[in-house]
Length: 254
Image (tube, rainbow, N blue to C red; front, side, top):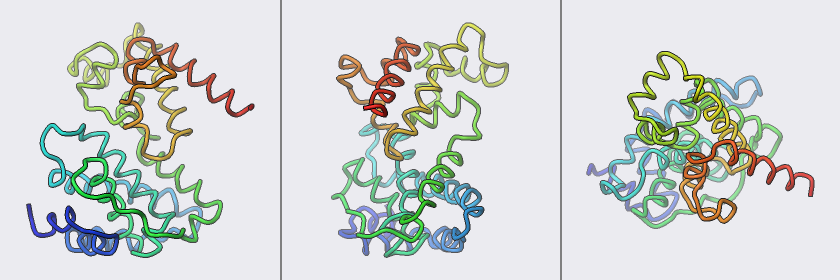
Protein backbone atom coordinates (compact mmCIF):
# COMPACT_ATOMS: atom_id res chain seq x y z
CA UNK A 1 0.00 0.00 0.00
CA UNK A 2 1.24 3.52 -0.77
CA UNK A 3 1.96 6.06 1.95
CA UNK A 4 -1.24 7.91 1.00
CA UNK A 5 -3.21 4.66 1.17
CA UNK A 6 -1.82 3.91 4.59
CA UNK A 7 -2.87 7.34 5.81
CA UNK A 8 -6.36 6.83 4.45
CA UNK A 9 -6.62 3.60 6.40
CA UNK A 10 -5.00 4.84 9.60
CA UNK A 11 -6.37 8.40 9.89
CA UNK A 12 -7.85 8.90 13.34
CA UNK A 13 -10.17 11.84 12.72
CA UNK A 14 -11.84 13.82 9.96
CA UNK A 15 -8.97 16.30 9.69
CA UNK A 16 -6.35 13.58 9.26
CA UNK A 17 -8.54 11.77 6.74
CA UNK A 18 -8.97 14.99 4.79
CA UNK A 19 -5.21 15.49 4.66
CA UNK A 20 -4.76 11.92 3.42
CA UNK A 21 -7.36 12.48 0.71
CA UNK A 22 -5.62 15.65 -0.48
CA UNK A 23 -2.38 13.68 -0.75
CA UNK A 24 -3.99 10.70 -2.48
CA UNK A 25 -6.14 12.56 -5.03
CA UNK A 26 -5.08 16.22 -5.31
CA UNK A 27 -6.29 16.71 -8.89
CA UNK A 28 -9.73 15.29 -8.14
CA UNK A 29 -10.03 17.42 -5.01
CA UNK A 30 -9.22 20.52 -7.07
CA UNK A 31 -11.74 19.61 -9.80
CA UNK A 32 -14.51 19.12 -7.26
CA UNK A 33 -13.56 22.33 -5.48
CA UNK A 34 -14.22 24.18 -8.73
CA UNK A 35 -17.84 23.02 -8.96
CA UNK A 36 -20.27 25.92 -8.72
CA UNK A 37 -23.42 24.63 -7.03
CA UNK A 38 -25.01 27.90 -6.00
CA UNK A 39 -27.67 28.06 -8.72
CA UNK A 40 -30.39 25.38 -9.08
CA UNK A 41 -29.51 24.97 -12.75
CA UNK A 42 -25.96 24.00 -11.77
CA UNK A 43 -26.96 21.04 -9.61
CA UNK A 44 -27.54 18.44 -12.33
CA UNK A 45 -24.31 19.05 -14.28
CA UNK A 46 -22.45 19.32 -11.00
CA UNK A 47 -23.89 16.01 -9.81
CA UNK A 48 -22.81 14.28 -13.03
CA UNK A 49 -19.23 15.50 -12.59
CA UNK A 50 -19.18 14.64 -8.88
CA UNK A 51 -20.54 11.12 -9.38
CA UNK A 52 -18.08 10.42 -12.20
CA UNK A 53 -15.11 11.48 -10.05
CA UNK A 54 -16.42 9.68 -6.97
CA UNK A 55 -16.82 6.41 -8.88
CA UNK A 56 -13.22 6.59 -10.08
CA UNK A 57 -11.71 7.64 -6.76
CA UNK A 58 -13.73 5.15 -4.74
CA UNK A 59 -12.48 2.36 -7.02
CA UNK A 60 -8.92 3.57 -6.38
CA UNK A 61 -9.45 3.76 -2.63
CA UNK A 62 -11.22 0.42 -2.20
CA UNK A 63 -8.47 -2.19 -2.86
CA UNK A 64 -6.29 -0.86 -0.06
CA UNK A 65 -9.11 -1.26 2.45
CA UNK A 66 -10.63 -4.64 1.67
CA UNK A 67 -8.96 -8.01 2.08
CA UNK A 68 -10.09 -10.23 -0.81
CA UNK A 69 -13.41 -11.94 -0.16
CA UNK A 70 -14.27 -10.14 3.08
CA UNK A 71 -17.14 -7.97 1.82
CA UNK A 72 -19.13 -7.55 -1.42
CA UNK A 73 -17.15 -4.83 -3.16
CA UNK A 74 -19.75 -3.53 -5.65
CA UNK A 75 -22.40 -2.49 -3.10
CA UNK A 76 -19.71 -1.03 -0.85
CA UNK A 77 -18.41 1.14 -3.68
CA UNK A 78 -21.91 2.23 -4.65
CA UNK A 79 -22.74 3.21 -1.08
CA UNK A 80 -19.46 5.10 -0.76
CA UNK A 81 -20.17 7.09 -3.93
CA UNK A 82 -23.58 8.12 -2.64
CA UNK A 83 -22.16 8.98 0.79
CA UNK A 84 -19.52 11.14 -0.84
CA UNK A 85 -22.17 13.01 -2.80
CA UNK A 86 -24.31 13.44 0.32
CA UNK A 87 -21.35 15.19 2.00
CA UNK A 88 -22.08 18.27 -0.13
CA UNK A 89 -24.91 18.91 2.33
CA UNK A 90 -23.22 18.23 5.67
CA UNK A 91 -20.25 18.86 7.91
CA UNK A 92 -17.71 17.06 5.72
CA UNK A 93 -17.83 19.77 3.06
CA UNK A 94 -18.60 22.54 5.54
CA UNK A 95 -15.30 21.93 7.35
CA UNK A 96 -13.03 20.39 4.67
CA UNK A 97 -14.23 22.11 1.50
CA UNK A 98 -16.21 20.70 -1.39
CA UNK A 99 -13.68 18.36 -3.00
CA UNK A 100 -11.89 17.16 0.11
CA UNK A 101 -15.17 16.77 1.99
CA UNK A 102 -16.78 14.56 -0.66
CA UNK A 103 -13.77 12.28 -1.03
CA UNK A 104 -13.13 12.10 2.72
CA UNK A 105 -16.75 11.13 3.36
CA UNK A 106 -16.49 8.40 0.72
CA UNK A 107 -13.23 7.14 2.25
CA UNK A 108 -14.80 7.12 5.73
CA UNK A 109 -17.73 5.11 4.35
CA UNK A 110 -15.36 2.53 2.87
CA UNK A 111 -13.48 2.21 6.16
CA UNK A 112 -16.62 1.79 8.21
CA UNK A 113 -18.38 -0.72 5.95
CA UNK A 114 -15.28 -2.82 5.32
CA UNK A 115 -14.20 -2.79 8.96
CA UNK A 116 -10.71 -1.75 7.89
CA UNK A 117 -10.47 1.12 10.34
CA UNK A 118 -12.36 2.82 13.16
CA UNK A 119 -15.45 4.77 12.19
CA UNK A 120 -14.98 8.51 11.71
CA UNK A 121 -18.04 10.64 12.35
CA UNK A 122 -18.96 13.45 10.00
CA UNK A 123 -17.92 16.85 11.35
CA UNK A 124 -20.89 18.79 12.75
CA UNK A 125 -23.06 21.19 10.84
CA UNK A 126 -24.65 21.56 7.42
CA UNK A 127 -23.70 23.57 4.38
CA UNK A 128 -25.81 26.38 2.95
CA UNK A 129 -27.10 23.98 0.30
CA UNK A 130 -27.94 21.40 2.95
CA UNK A 131 -29.97 23.93 4.92
CA UNK A 132 -32.46 24.88 2.19
CA UNK A 133 -34.71 23.30 -0.42
CA UNK A 134 -31.72 22.77 -2.69
CA UNK A 135 -30.80 19.72 -0.59
CA UNK A 136 -33.57 17.60 -2.09
CA UNK A 137 -32.77 18.89 -5.57
CA UNK A 138 -29.15 17.86 -5.10
CA UNK A 139 -30.09 14.38 -3.90
CA UNK A 140 -32.39 13.93 -6.88
CA UNK A 141 -29.68 15.13 -9.24
CA UNK A 142 -27.20 12.66 -7.73
CA UNK A 143 -29.57 9.71 -8.05
CA UNK A 144 -30.30 10.68 -11.63
CA UNK A 145 -26.58 10.92 -12.33
CA UNK A 146 -26.05 7.45 -10.88
CA UNK A 147 -28.98 5.66 -12.43
CA UNK A 148 -31.61 7.89 -14.03
CA UNK A 149 -30.24 7.76 -17.57
CA UNK A 150 -29.34 4.09 -17.49
CA UNK A 151 -31.31 1.38 -19.23
CA UNK A 152 -33.50 -0.76 -16.92
CA UNK A 153 -31.05 -3.61 -16.34
CA UNK A 154 -28.27 -1.20 -15.48
CA UNK A 155 -30.54 0.82 -13.21
CA UNK A 156 -31.33 -2.40 -11.33
CA UNK A 157 -27.66 -3.43 -11.19
CA UNK A 158 -26.50 -0.03 -9.96
CA UNK A 159 -29.40 0.46 -7.57
CA UNK A 160 -28.85 -2.88 -5.84
CA UNK A 161 -25.06 -2.80 -6.14
CA UNK A 162 -24.85 -6.05 -8.12
CA UNK A 163 -22.16 -7.57 -10.26
CA UNK A 164 -23.15 -8.79 -13.73
CA UNK A 165 -23.22 -12.36 -12.40
CA UNK A 166 -25.48 -11.37 -9.50
CA UNK A 167 -27.75 -9.47 -11.89
CA UNK A 168 -28.14 -12.63 -13.95
CA UNK A 169 -28.83 -14.69 -10.83
CA UNK A 170 -31.57 -12.25 -9.85
CA UNK A 171 -33.47 -13.32 -12.97
CA UNK A 172 -32.32 -16.93 -12.98
CA UNK A 173 -30.00 -16.59 -15.97
CA UNK A 174 -26.27 -16.37 -16.67
CA UNK A 175 -24.29 -13.19 -17.12
CA UNK A 176 -23.98 -14.14 -20.79
CA UNK A 177 -27.78 -14.11 -21.08
CA UNK A 178 -27.87 -10.66 -19.48
CA UNK A 179 -25.40 -9.44 -22.10
CA UNK A 180 -27.72 -10.76 -24.81
CA UNK A 181 -30.66 -8.98 -23.20
CA UNK A 182 -28.73 -5.73 -23.31
CA UNK A 183 -27.92 -6.21 -27.00
CA UNK A 184 -31.20 -7.66 -28.28
CA UNK A 185 -33.75 -6.54 -25.73
CA UNK A 186 -35.36 -8.18 -22.73
CA UNK A 187 -37.39 -11.28 -23.73
CA UNK A 188 -41.15 -10.90 -23.43
CA UNK A 189 -41.22 -13.79 -20.96
CA UNK A 190 -38.98 -11.80 -18.61
CA UNK A 191 -40.27 -8.26 -19.13
CA UNK A 192 -42.79 -8.39 -16.28
CA UNK A 193 -40.18 -9.60 -13.81
CA UNK A 194 -37.73 -6.89 -14.87
CA UNK A 195 -40.45 -4.24 -14.58
CA UNK A 196 -41.42 -5.34 -11.05
CA UNK A 197 -37.80 -5.42 -9.89
CA UNK A 198 -37.17 -1.98 -11.38
CA UNK A 199 -40.27 -0.55 -9.70
CA UNK A 200 -39.13 -1.97 -6.36
CA UNK A 201 -35.63 -0.55 -6.77
CA UNK A 202 -36.97 2.88 -7.70
CA UNK A 203 -39.38 2.83 -4.74
CA UNK A 204 -36.74 1.83 -2.19
CA UNK A 205 -34.22 4.28 -3.65
CA UNK A 206 -36.68 7.09 -2.93
CA UNK A 207 -37.62 5.91 0.54
CA UNK A 208 -34.26 4.85 1.99
CA UNK A 209 -31.41 7.09 3.01
CA UNK A 210 -29.04 7.69 0.10
CA UNK A 211 -26.57 4.86 -0.32
CA UNK A 212 -28.32 2.33 1.93
CA UNK A 213 -30.15 0.14 -0.59
CA UNK A 214 -27.17 -1.99 -1.76
CA UNK A 215 -26.52 -3.01 1.84
CA UNK A 216 -30.12 -3.27 3.03
CA UNK A 217 -30.99 -5.46 0.04
CA UNK A 218 -28.68 -8.23 1.28
CA UNK A 219 -29.91 -8.39 4.85
CA UNK A 220 -32.65 -10.72 6.15
CA UNK A 221 -35.93 -8.87 6.62
CA UNK A 222 -38.73 -9.70 9.06
CA UNK A 223 -41.20 -8.24 6.56
CA UNK A 224 -40.02 -10.84 4.04
CA UNK A 225 -40.12 -13.80 6.45
CA UNK A 226 -36.38 -13.77 7.01
CA UNK A 227 -35.44 -13.46 3.36
CA UNK A 228 -33.38 -10.61 1.99
CA UNK A 229 -34.81 -8.21 -0.57
CA UNK A 230 -32.60 -9.83 -3.20
CA UNK A 231 -33.91 -13.29 -2.35
CA UNK A 232 -37.50 -12.09 -2.39
CA UNK A 233 -37.08 -10.33 -5.74
CA UNK A 234 -35.53 -13.47 -7.19
CA UNK A 235 -38.37 -15.76 -6.15
CA UNK A 236 -41.37 -13.39 -6.43
CA UNK A 237 -40.66 -9.99 -8.01
CA UNK A 238 -44.34 -9.03 -8.36
CA UNK A 239 -45.22 -9.99 -4.79
CA UNK A 240 -42.17 -8.21 -3.39
CA UNK A 241 -43.07 -5.00 -5.19
CA UNK A 242 -46.64 -5.24 -3.91
CA UNK A 243 -45.37 -5.80 -0.35
CA UNK A 244 -43.20 -2.69 -0.29
CA UNK A 245 -45.67 -0.53 -2.21
CA UNK A 246 -48.40 -1.40 0.30
CA UNK A 247 -46.05 -0.84 3.24
CA UNK A 248 -45.07 2.63 2.13
CA UNK A 249 -48.64 3.55 1.17
CA UNK A 250 -49.73 2.58 4.70
CA UNK A 251 -46.88 4.53 6.27
CA UNK A 252 -47.76 7.64 4.22
CA UNK A 253 -51.40 7.46 5.25
CA UNK A 254 -50.85 6.63 8.90
